[in-house]
Length: 131
Image (cartoon, rainbow, N blue to C red; front, side, top):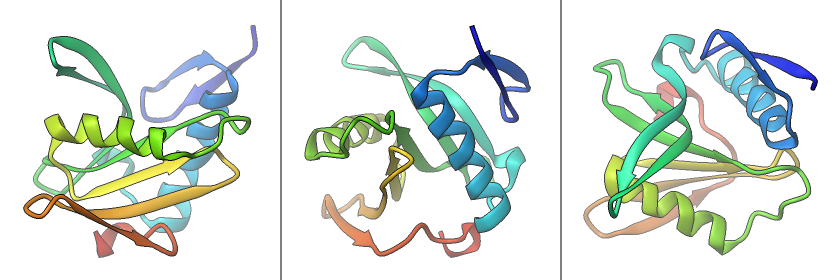
């Protein structure tokens, strides 16, 4: 089994198609968008309707509060409404303002208004300091 180093978990993990997308996207966020490595975590557990789930990546603000959830899919998996519904369910627990999904081919980001429950999609992934 081929492995890849996860810089956030600080260990080697199995290189699946989804994991490859995660590691490249985390590198992109850190190196090209200025996301602080120390304010990001992979495989963050949460409980939703009594069931344990995991957010692929959570980005935190400088006060260690969740700021964004990132959901990854393998490149062969289309980013559909169903993917956004999955991340929106996680957000019922996390309560973040930013939702990002990527399959390594297409990436989407929206700002989620917690009061109105409305999402505004952005043309690109914003830099950390714009979140």
